Length: 237
Image 1 (tube, one colour):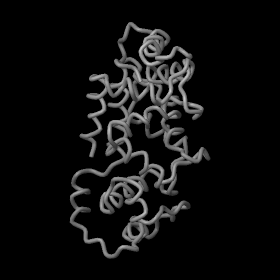
Image 2 (cartoon, helix red, strand yellow):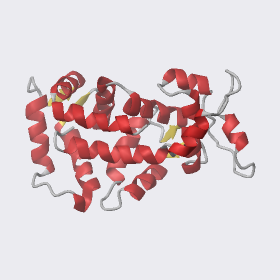
Image 3 (cartoon, one colour):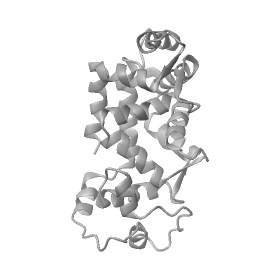
Image 4 (cartoon, one colour):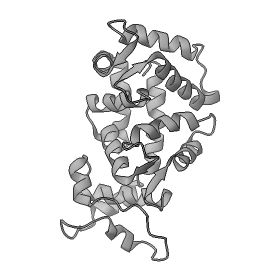
């Protein structure tokens, strides 16, 4: 998570999240909706939509279960599900669909590799699909999480093989993907390799060649620029 690239990185993630959330008008309508009873499911949303639409192959968990596991209200979850189902009628996002959504919003560069890393961070079971429940867990951490929760999620993005530490190669792969994502809008004179070396000098405190989650969080929480860049998510919801 480079000091200079972090804000651009998170702004692009914000744009994607804004695309997946409903518009304010729809959300206000949902807030005024009288939810009927505690054992209701997202099937209520299915029933209200076009009866001719094919049913989703992946049924999401109950509203209350998702609400307890995240920081979203049942009304907010219903609204997000509408947007989710519009993009993913099957009820789950494949990596190909995820990449297509990203490409729509970042046409100036090649977003496919960065989208792959974000997808992998959200795909908790590593089975090639993101369920609505997993999507909401990730969305909750990024949009409504504390600074430490957001940083832990960012760490999982850079920890490509999910072994609990970030190597130089993993950092280089993700930073290079961010450079490609930014495309012609990126005018930095700094190469990805140089950027990674600067990051490791600041974060790899014991000089063992890897960045642990504690080193990552400890540095990022004390860097004012990074802390400010994380507040961009406060405006998403």
